[in-house]
Length: 262
Length: 340
Image (cartoon, rainbow over all chains, first blue to last red; front, side, top):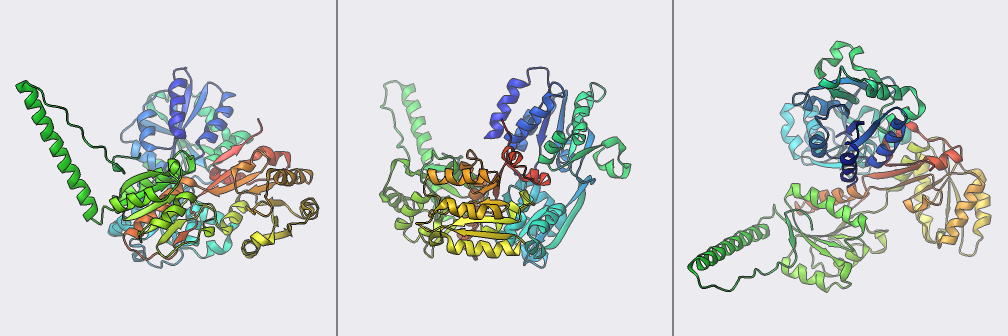
């Protein structure tokens, strides 16, 4: 509902010649869109004629936001990989968290010891169901599609919720990032210790900032404004709302890391 | 009403126009009658299939009041999720109806496979007339006061103590001495549980009891200097009226301590952190549980703890108190309150 409201705001605001940062992340369900909008707009207002537009729904995001010139897209690398064949997008920045640019997803459980035990079970995870089933398939491997199809996916707002749901028996297993399990260890060591890792995903980038290819050679003020957020306290705090604390230029990455996104 | 699978509990009778004189009108009427007949057959087939096919179960949603946002969100998320499973939904809003007769009549005529009651009123009324049908509830404040029978299931409205304490630790990692003020008459067991959970998390629960005739102010003066944060629990023996709540918040302000509360209602009074159950997740969780019930799967826990949390962090208030919060956990926060 909030997203729909914010989208209407976009239609009115976009008529002005401002540049927009569009955000959609299928890997979280935290309904913080009003906060994101307000915090980013306040921050960006001092940097130029920029505004921020978060989305909670993938279809709405893809129909409304994509293909607009003079804009920037903050996307999960999983989503970016899906879009790059359809749209001429160029990654320009990669999010960092405590110096890391990549994350790994894990599948954890308390009392399931083998993957076969997941048949028909409830698996909790943050993000939309399409993404969660996709990452589950990747983690389980091609010969376990039947198990991946049989599970009931319970989408929760954030990784910590998914991990705790396993702790008190609402779900048999949880999909989360490795760093979230480490976070759980800091706040509830007993629950964290009771969870065993059943499967892991390949590494992927944390968050990608991409621009339409035709915009690349033009005004770079928006890219500069976003990149500088990590070096200013209030900018860094806003990035932390997205789960990152800074950026690295995509073109400075080792080519072996960046080849999949090119 | 929800999506295309929603069936209103009373179907309007189709009206057929009176006949005309011309051949064209007659043909049109005949075509129209054929169309109505065809649609009726389709609908009959559809409903008959729903009744006969256990994989396409019929679910009656009894909503205490469809205008209440929390109930509406739970209902919408339930419906969205149950559609994956193929469930058909019949809606009943109790806003204009205070007795169980309407529910009983619909149960008799529709014979739903499961009844999902949202809110205390719906759960209370439905439990009385459910005729052995499984009843699933959510959004019932303190469901334990109503009890449950063997065929009732639910998603609690309150987070567990371990969730509340863990999430407080996530957001306010520097707060290790947790103050709690309670009336033993109402919250003795709950606090005992909290004490055990806090110890496991490495937190110290500092307790202050207040009896019916004790002075709250004196109790607060005794407790507040010893703690890092005051954890406000829903104790009806303490939070008796607004005056008492105001008294607590002014005492806490004097001692410059943050308040950790369970409802957004305390934000305007100066609560620093509020953690509550996430309503959309409650609806999805109820749908997940409904699917298990309808598939006759083994249900290990008939009343589940809410799996999702909703966090509001009042960084304006924390700033005034010079209290630290965990910036690395900001991606878990739903709402961030800054000073205006």
